[in-house]
Every structure is written in C-alpha cells, then in structure tokens.
Length: 235
Image 1 (tube, rainbow, N blue to C red):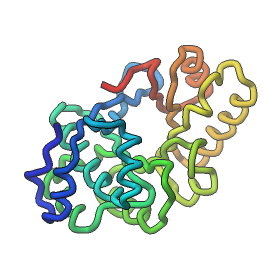
Image 2 (image 1 turned 180 degrees about the vertical axis):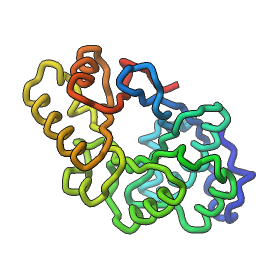
Image 3 (image 1 turned 90 degrees about the vertical axis):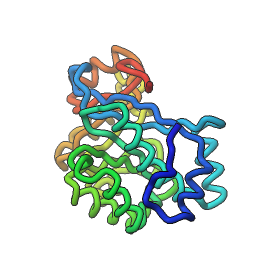
Image 4 (image 1 turned 60 degrees about the horizontal axis):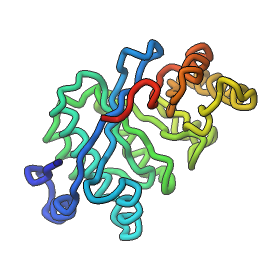
C-alpha cells in the first residue's frame, strides 16, 4: 500500500492523499526485439474499486488534482521500491499538473535519481490544457526527461494536437492496432502515422499488442516500441 504520510506537502493535500487506498503495478514497454525493456509504465490500482471508477468519482468531485499528485509521488515510490533501472512512465491528466510547491517537494523527495528516468504520459481525457502542458514541459525538460501523448486515436489526441504538443513519444491506441496484420485500412492508416511521427522526430509505441501476428507486422512496419498482453501483462 502506498503511504503518503512522510511527504513534505501541505496538510490539505496530505489529508486528501491519506484518503486514497492504492497500489501500483507496472507493465513493460519493449524495444522491437520484444525482450529488452525500454521503460516501465506505472498503473494505479485502487484497492476498493477500479481505477476508472476512482477517476470518475474524483472528476465528479472536481478533485482530479489529488490523483495527479498521488500518481507522481506514489508511482515513483513504488518504482524505486522495485529497483527498476529503466525509465518509468507515469500517467498525467492533460487538464492538470503539479503546483510549484508540489513539484519542489517531488524534487526534494527524489532529487537527481529522477533525471533522465521519467516519461510523462499525457492521458486522452478529460481535456487538453495548453497551460498545464507547458508547465509539464518546463519541469520535464529541466530534468532531461521525456513527454508522451497516450492513446493516440481514441480520445483528444490527433495530428494537429500532436504537432502543437511536440512530444517525444506517441502511443498508438489498441483501436488502431487490433487486427492490423489482416486489415488493409488499418495498415495504410498506421503506415502514414508512422511516417508523420518519424518526420517530426517522435518515437512511436504500438500499444495494446495482443497477438503475435500484430507484433510481427508492426516490427516490419517500423514501430519503435511495443506494449501489450502478447509481450507482458501488468504485474
């Protein structure tokens, strides 16, 4: 169970964090060989409901910021406890970011250990805030970390927004990947997306790869990174 009591945060946010009962599991993101881990994605697992139910509950209470802070501090705590050496990928709401005092506390807790080790994944909901994205870019680049657009093809992320965001990584949603080995329309669409993203210097993650045929096709197509149940489940 993630414990927030020791964090150097204001009492108001600490009180809100203490109300959470959460753990984290990690799913690897692989290089094209399907064996070498590039990063570990931290996935929140509440103990009393599903993560989507928790997000829905906190969104209705206008308290998504609590989950934003919990994810950064909780995921990093779990990551270091596991002793991983590769990067850690952390989900972040596109409508939110940590406040200055929270970011300062984060650096106080983890310091230089996070330099060059984090990927901040901008989720596909609820809405995109340019102001919060710019705040993330400043703090992330200051520590030589990376930014990603999650679930491209299923939510708010489209080519125009990706051009505005200029992330380091784009993750293609399973909706674009499922059955790509035998569906010509998906093949052509993803091929064009690879071309566009690579021309922008963006790495492409094929997310939600569940079949060997999908994986083999995407390797040949030129995907940079892979994630999905075919290669490894969250654990």
